[in-house]
Image (tube, rainbow, N blue to C red):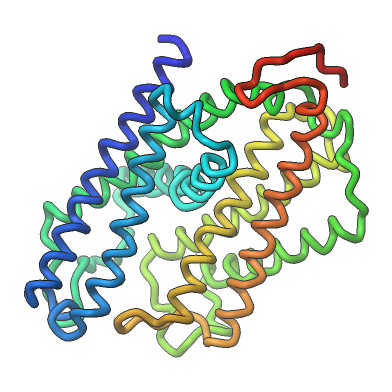
Length: 328
């Protein structure tokens, strides 16, 4: 099976599986509009419908992205739009691949991941098994599909980003600027590692009584913050200059996307407070932490995009066809 076939099937698989999640969310919106459903939908129908309508839009964009990665029309879409939605999709779901692998391994080993609890609403209404299954399949399928299809799409459209070695030529970034960027990415990561290990400072009372799966999710965010920062250092040539360019770009792209997407979502929830949502941190810390992480993610992406420009200037067109020989 060649790369284009893998890309097509992976993209279609991502779109198909996320459609299952989309279907569940559409049902939830309908339930909220009808005044039925779980206690949260009945007590705050407007907020329930709004929150799920937002996730409907996000899921629909994800389905469209999967189709764009799989089908020929995706190569003709404007590059900024494709890159932005692919970046955020990788940030939200592609970054969950290590988390999913660890969960699967621990589950196979018989480790209790949720403390014996069940997904439920506040008044004990259990989430139906079929809904939980469709949501899980939707997220997992989209994460795996994007992880497979996106690199192949990017390599086909912008092959110069995958050739050569990181740091050759070096991306010129002053050391003070790089250190500031590193601090912005790693300061939130240090907090996440501390909380995932059981630390309680900075959290609301009772907020750290998490099951293992939640601790692992928080730790996964810290992992990608570190990996994204590592990618930045590799791209500037200040560390391991013989590293393949594709590896450094991947670390910077996914790591920055994870910082931006997850923290932009959490920041919006902390500010808008949909339903009975409460951030697990104390509010001033939540606002500062997520704002810094969003800024660090955007800055890491800007650095990665800068690294791709010199090669474009030597003749790589929009669809990645080189008009002249690229020189190192």
